[in-house]
Image 1 (cartoon, rainbow, N blue to C red):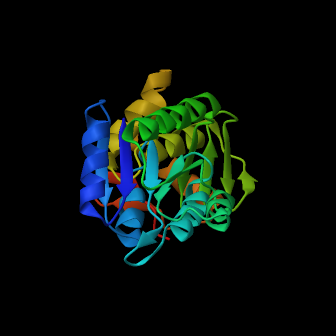
Image 2: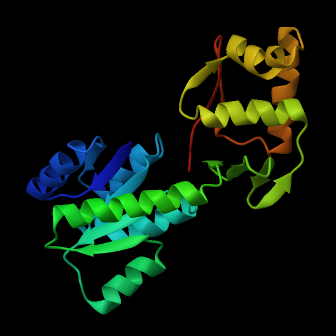
Amino acid sequence: MEIYYVEDDRDIAEGVKSCLEARDFRVTILESVTDAKQVLLKRQPAMIIIDWNLPDGSGDTLCGWIRRRFGENLPVLFLTVKGETADIVNGFQNGADDYVIKPFDLEVLYSRIQAILRRAGSAESRELYCDKIRLDAEKMAVYREDEEVSLSQPEYQLLTYLMEHKGKTVTREKLLEKVWDVNGNYVNDNTLTVTMKRLREKLGNPACIRTVRSFGYRMEDTL
């Protein structure tokens, strides 16, 4: 299970990393708001731990950005020296799931992380995001800027597969196999082209769906 830790104090970061990796977590240390955003747009972890004071911005600003971008699906824990009541309240108002003040006990931190992940697992709704597109797998609904978009079954399955593999190029052959052949519908290559064209039109021709010439398609965040 992967955790991102946004912390510019290397000694503290390495201490937390060693503790958690001894308990079978995989921890990626990020030293700035910019680094965190770049990595999050490519891959989301099980949760993220954020320091408040960072070289290029504040942790509460990053937390607010995470909530706007990914909704409630990515648990956030503050780990910071800022322990005033106003700071704690501000952290929760910006979307934090928990708030731990430095200095801290590693065993207590580990217990808080476990509790957050248990809650996240029980409340998971399986929502996928890319730019202004949101796919709610539980409801089987797709939204563009919070307005629901009506899709056919092949269009929905095509979008789902691309969003599940966001950031990766998916070949035309793989999409034909996963969207049509799995249902026993054997179609020609032009079916995919037509379905993709209709899907793009219904979603407002978003820049986040990219054609990779001679290979297939890739979904990636552009905003």
